Amino acid sequence: MAEQTIEVILGDITALAADAIVNAANSSLLGGGGVDGAIHRAAGPGLLAECREIAARQGGCPAGEAVITGAYNLSCRRVIHTVGPVWNGGSRGEPGLLASCYRKSLLLAQSEGLESIAFPNISTGVYRYPRQAAAEIAFDAVVKTLPEVPGIRRVIFVCFDRENFGIYEDLKKNII
Ligand code: ADP
Image (cartoon, rainbow, N blue to C red; front, side, top):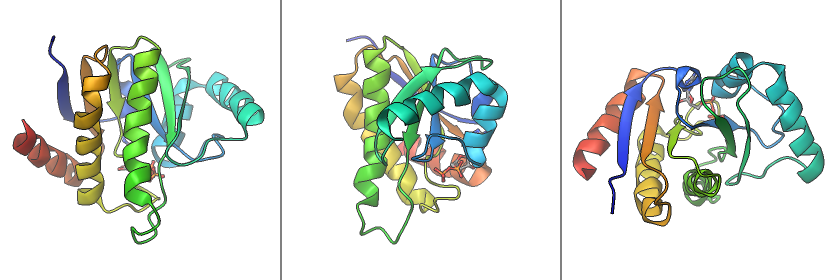
């Protein structure tokens, strides 16, 4: 079995030239702040137009699910929009929904023939998911799903702040 790698970097996901970058969208798919706003700004208006079409067709996207679009002015090939859970204390299904975001995004990337995928730290911004717990779920979901997606060669966790970067680096050391 050929190698599959997991990388951790500190940076801006909009600058990545991976096959797919993942957007931490909201369920309307109509754009928002944080990484969603940054991705839409960098992609240009075509991305919002395509998201509007998907939203009109399927009524947005529930938490834990993912949809795929073109990348417009971004350097990647496709954008996968997944909707993380809002943190409400942890007993409202948040862990399973967050794991599902990573899993569904990987399955979608595999089904589209993509080989590299970059994730932001889903739900750890305005959705307030505790960072350590979110990072553990992210790693666990990716490690568990990788055997089902042999076409995916590279997974890149893109941390935007040093606190998340430190958490992800520590987890990576422990896993690999
Ligand atoms: P959510 O609503 O899922 O919490 P946010 O966009 O508010 O989404 O935050 C998710 C994570 O994305 C946060 O850790 C935030 O620091 C990070 N983030 C914000 N902008 C960028 C960017 N340009 N590239 C990568 N990560 C980003």
